[in-house]
Amino acid sequence: IMLLTHGIDKDFFMCSDEKFITTMDLTILFEPDYCTSLAGKPKFVLIQACRAGGIDVVDTDTKKYFKAFDASKTLSINKGKHFSISNKSEILVFYAASPRCYAERDPLKGTHLVVALCRALNKNPYEDITDIFLRVSREISLKLSTIGQAPETVSTLTRKFRFKSPEDDSNATHSEKV
Image 1 (tube, rainbow, N blue to C red):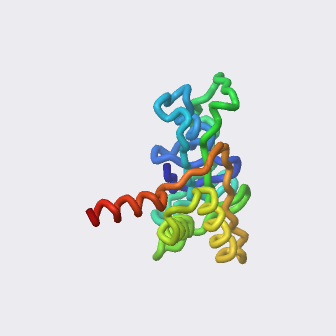
Image 2: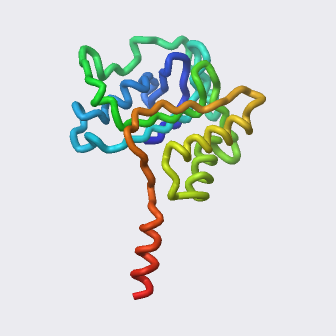
Image 3: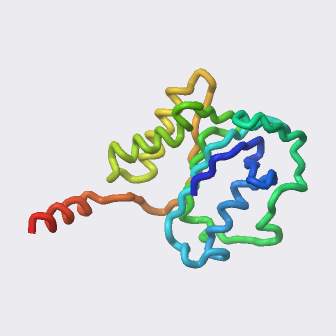
């Protein structure tokens, strides 16, 4: 899941209906109690949004101003539900910014998170996903050190994950030769 939106403190992120959702409310939808088909499978959530700011949000593209964050406008999916630790496994959340920090976006090139992630995936598609996110974090942190933007990874993955293995290429090459 890739979420590109406006965010504020306490990991509240704006939805298209101008309500807010938290990371927990988003990730809980992919836990076994809600989505049994994804039980035991790795899930990745990338969030390109600020995690700072107070109660006001300004959309820099449309210049639309959202005054006074209202907690009653939050979506709450997990009220009254209790989950075991095993339900929380196999989720990796990658934030473009650490708590209380802003996530800068280049108006011409796009978000630093997306650009760095695409570059990392193209450079080594065989690499474990946690190593890829580590490299992306380093690239963004070095590039944006003057404004203090540093990505954050929260993970409950219990095993390595690769989008592609070297065997995939060797099998394709072998079958092409035959």
